[in-house]
Image (cartoon, rainbow, N blue to C red; front, side, top):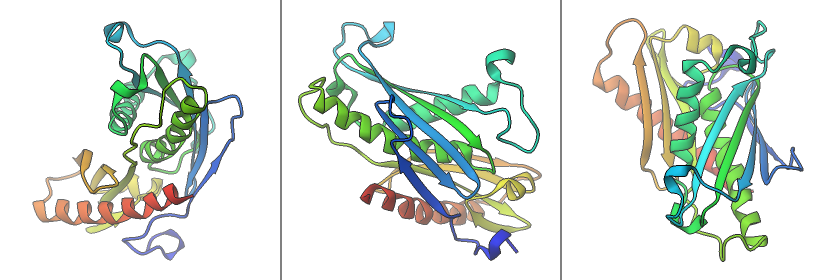
Length: 233
């Protein structure tokens, strides 16, 4: 039985609160169960060196967990240096968000997203992507208000969720207890029109059969379509 008697195909309770960081160009606090991530966007009037003079923008992300986000205090990566896990997650978030908009329409601006995990109970990278996409929409609107771009570009909504196999049962949106005991762990990123952006799947104990992946993908697709309801606010 899952915590809270949650069905196998059910998301944890999800909510988003906007404007948490007034100094940011867009911000959203996303809560997925007991995983809470603060996503803030900064608009910079410059691009990385490899894009200078090309007339296009860039979207990138930074990710971190606060020391007391987990059951035991983790050392600040500002002191210890970024871990390989953090590098991987930052790159995943950036890749996912760059799918949302035609970068050629942003001019030479960088939209930098900071994802800070306040509380971690599984699925932090997925919550970061889902929350950051909503914060990014706010920042793009602000660019229009400031006349940094002429008009709002077409935005392709993006969201992400985890799925896995726990005790032989495919389940959606794993919490930490489930993730730590999973036979298979997967993260799915999808656009609102039903196209996959990225899929990360790992067998934790033994190889798994293709039909289990199909079930996980179906669960993830259903869960992500529910997350897109957040875009209706």
